[in-house]
Image 1 (tube, one colour):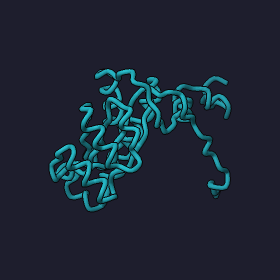
Image 2 (spheres, rainbow, N blue to C red):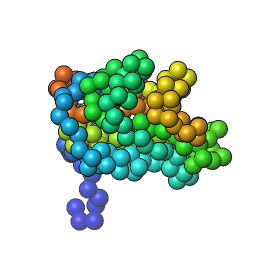
Image 3 (cartoon, rainbow, N blue to C red):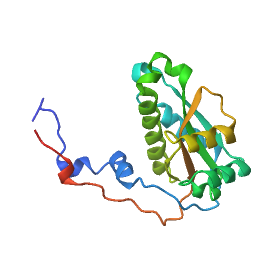
Image 4 (spheres, rainbow, N blue to C red):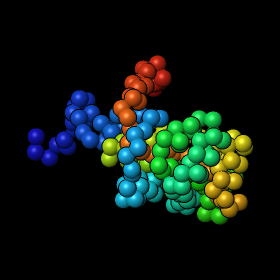
Length: 185
């Protein structure tokens, strides 16, 4: 056994905190009124900024929305973000076209901001918070609504709005494993 690499068996690989968080992550649409701290939001933002990024451009910028009137206005204008009326905070993940530079037309900013979003969602799950990805981009009406409500500069394109809060427990994870979606070659 000496010198041989350790390889965990299949069941052991799923008995760790990272995989537990991944498999327990869910889209949370029902929140309590318990406040989320600035430190918790910073934890989520640090996780977002740890995401992979093409050519290390890091073309993201995050807007933290805490104003009740802004959350309510977005809730009214975004068809799949009605739960913003229940939350006290949301994170808007935007692509910064200046940071994206010559790669903006290739759409790498979308991939990078999507990876940052997934990190935020997983981080929320890992610290006992709930969150859900609600799309802004590529829908013109939603993108315009977010840009207007937050008074975003032209160079910032909102990819999504993430309501964040303490979950009520109504939302549960789904088992999305489907063997038919895997092709072994």
